[in-house]
Length: 313
Length: 269
Image 1 (cartoon, rainbow over the protein chains, first blue to last red):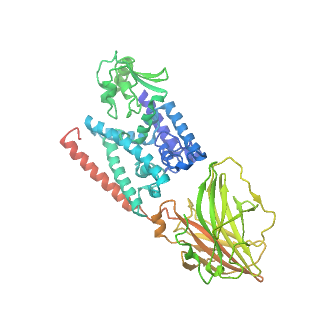
Image 2 (cartoon, helix red, strand yellow):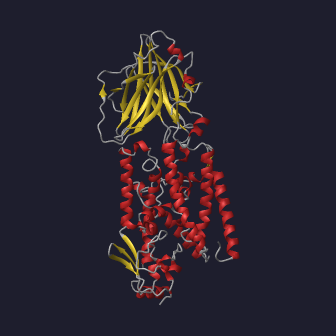
Image 3 (cartoon, rainbow over the protein chains, first blue to last red):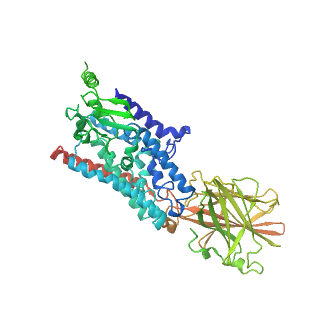
């Protein structure tokens, strides 16, 4: 049931955020998801673009305490409010690039191809990459604004983000698949972009939510995760340790399984797809709450019904 | 960013004034000021009585409205500058002119300024008519993210109040002079060529090419320049086939790598 609702919301969000701008809808520059601004007619912009640009760290130090700084702060506060309201639901339920990855996963499953596994060691090592990307997309614009770094380094993450060449294809725009021979910087960025996009294209086919493992938006969200209104709780006392949560997780999170204290288990890679809660056989062992209001919690009956439906009983 | 070598725009045989784009300044209240420098060709500098800027006037209008405003000219180190401030996103058309007995020297340009302030900006409205200003209409290409090299611009010269004939139309691009072509529809057309220096300078770099028109009406000559603000082309250097080839090649490479790794072990790394 939850999976179906999620799928419907994901598809509606994809259509809305990709084509909504054509109806004159624009939700601003603060969206905590990959609603790519390079899509002509998108209904709102990914906050990472603002963060790297004139509404973020590309403001010169002298302009911080001016209207320009105020506007950047306003856009950041709006990002925080949007993030606090829905937390990681933005990733698992709304993000158009996440939805695209889930379509690839569905295709792979229909073709009967097994998912590729990474070792835990590799998964742990990968976690740092998203923080390195986040640091780069902050430091480079600062250097452009204050230390005279070449302006072709502008929007460094957008220039290599795989969403930039892929998402505009849904509007018939192929331009971002080109190599740009204008100068050595533009050429290097476009070569890197094509190699990353090609690699990720393969990655998202063989591995669920492959890009999310490197997504700097997740890193940014994790910094503010404590102030979100949505909490993901585990009741350690009633957990029987079956390991379903670990097995069902599309991004290989094992922290929920390993957690031994009654605390929030919303980890940095979690995108609140709720698959772990759906597959948990313990009543209220795992639950997602908005403040103290229960949104969805695990139950033996829910799992039994789901298994029954799967086996046609 | 100023033109790399402004003197290259000074052609000895021709006398004219032109507007050069300088930097823009972000003000504390969110408004934005574009600084423009008034320049004279060497030919004009040599003319008696025009060696100084004292008789130059500058006006501008906003968002193609009819009202004109005075632009105060600031003199510094033998240079004349005007500053145009915008509180919100506005389109400015600026005219600088020197009127003599026989020749009107007019320099014109137009540009957007993306201000973001709620504070009102004081403007000095002009009450007198400016009949002598010719109407230069610029027809921009359909895709106009910003004016850029490699795109075709068309120029239509006309005036409701003065009859004149255009007897010279040129474009000056860093010392190179090219005669503008007149189309059968009465418009001049110009495709600015790619500029390697502009390509190297970065996405925010720009330059100003000068369009020069010499017009005659009754016994008076008008020498009009228009500074066409140009950015580098966004499309000229894009190679889609190269990009797709690299993209597909990378997909093939990684697919084979993953398949080989999966054959060896279910956990690939």
